[in-house]
Each structure stands twice: as C-alpha cells, then as structure tokens.
Length: 262
Image (tube, rainbow, N blue to C red; front, side, top):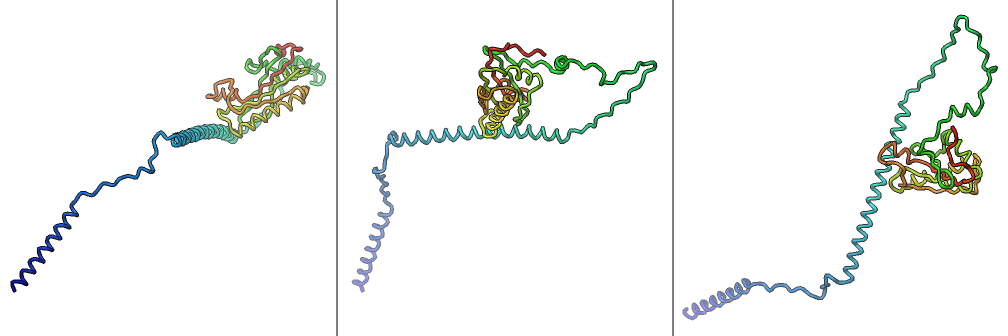
C-alpha cells in the first residue's frame, strides 16, 4: 500500500510540473511580426512620382471640364428662361381689335375736299426722309476703308431683318465694294453647339440678304463667333440684346464713308 501510494504522489507531481511548464509557455510575450522588405518602394520612386503627376493632371482636367459643363448648363437655363418669358408674354398679350375710324363730320360752310387721287403726290425722296430714322451710333461706324454696320437680333432668332435706315445704308455701301466681311455673334458666355449654329446662320442669312440687294457674292466672306466678343455688358438684358448681332464690315473707299442722309 505504501509503495502504491508513493507512486500516485509521484505521478501527481509530474502532472503538476507539466501543467506549470505549459502555463509558463502560454504567458510568454509573442514574438513581433517582421515585415517583408521585398515589396517596399521608395516614396520618391520616379515611376510612382510620374503616376501621381498623371493622376493630378487627370483630376484637374476633369474639374475644368465639369466647370465648363456647369457654365453651359447655366447659360442654356438662362436662355430657356428668357424664351419661356417671351412665349408667355406672347400668349397672354391681349389682342386689341383696331378701332374703326370715326366718320368725318362736315363743318358748316366747309369747302369740298378733292379726292385723294386728285391730290399731288409727295416726292418719294421726301416721303422716305420723313419715314426713315437715322442710324444710332452703335449701329453705324466709319472705318479707314469704309463703314461698319451692325444689325441686332431678337433672342434665338437668325433672320436678317435690318431697319429701313440700315437697309438703305447697306444698299448704297455694298455696291462696288472691294470686300465685305459678315460676322455673326451671340450673347453666349461659353461655346456650345446651339449658339454655334445660331452664329453661323446669322452670318449666312445676312450674306444672302446682301447678295439679293446688290452685293457681289465673290467679295463676301463670313465668320461666326459662338461666345464672347461682346460690345456691351452681357450681364444686363439690354447688353445681351446688343451683343446678339451681325456686323457687316464693308471695304469700299470709292464711296463716301459718311452716314446716308436721312
């Protein structure tokens, strides 16, 4: 019995010793992980620097493009608002019927008036001088070799419809001209496809009008400017109406460059 008891004590002691050894191993501080230096790249590596510069350039280009798109959207929205206002006013404008002329009242002892057909007609030049107003300063300017005439356009319109004074001046000045440059403009702040077509059509339709009124087609050249090149403050409605224009630069030193007598 004593030997068996002693053997049990020895076995228990060995178990306790093994447990102590295991606990001691678990309580030890873990060894820190060491990074593998094979994948390290210097911060000033030329390839990384070049890639970073390319990324910065692309980001700047995208930012610039986004700003241009925002400006185009703002311009188109402004034009849409103006067009909506014009259409709304046209729809809501009341149609006033013309008042019938009052019947003539014969005055006592009045002499009979001769029919209109028997009255002497006024001279055509006198009638025209009374009806035609002189051109404003912004619409007519003398140059070294001729004259520069401007014709303004309504919003989003391309028809060339000069006033009677401008038409009279153009008919006189284009005859015998050595060169005529027609330039179409818009009131747009940024280049966009819609205003580009508007500027081109304004110049082309003005050219057609000039040919139909005595200008030689061979001496006419056309240019179009989609955005910018304003002659007035484009932030105001009046300025934008002046910037929507066609300029006709006539080189004709044989003619007197003074305005047509009105």
